[in-house]
Length: 282
Figure 1 (tube, rainbow, N blue to C red):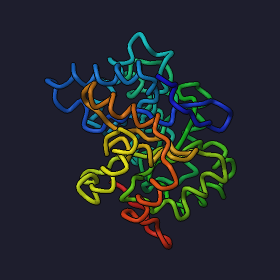
Figure 2: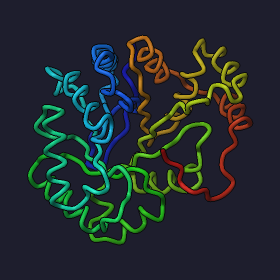
Figure 3: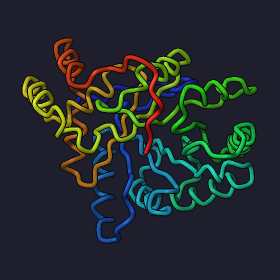
């Protein structure tokens, strides 16, 4: 199987454009074994970027990730996120320590502010500086930030330099960032991490188009939807899969090269934005 294409973070480190999400993992103890097996299957297939958050199952998803990566720490790039109310220097340090314990690791690869709250960005950047200096995290980032939020960061001393990525909702049905946010990030050589890359209900809408394109590639509609998200450099998709079969299906998307015809047909059913749209999130 070919190696998954990678994208580059500021500083030169490469990560796969197809990773794994963990939303809703850790909620049911009876599913834990399958969830761990799914994540491990993804690691073996090269989907070594794993995204989680302190919010998911009140830390339960981080514990699932910790179990899945035990003995494999050097193979994975761990991303986790903290609540906006924990974005002060003191609260961020405490939240980071809790996540490290749940993940059972000594350092988080990428630590993200989950969404913007009332804490001033300057204070959050100071918290990131503390954690970077203490080597508890390797990189800092944000999530659910629109262009105006990123511009505000850019006006702060060292703001954009510290922030290596922005994780946002992005898929065929929700592609508003194509208008402004994605070009803004690409201009500054910072990748987007796309969550919910296969929108729930996506396959019911314009399903015939996805099926038609999928048939040309001997693929599934899910694989085409994922291949579209990572069609160009600068986007990392983190689909969630709770069983190895679904993981393998997701993995297959990384090997699909969509043609001009494919993209034109998809644009007809899922039109690109014609102007600025408010950032969507969930």
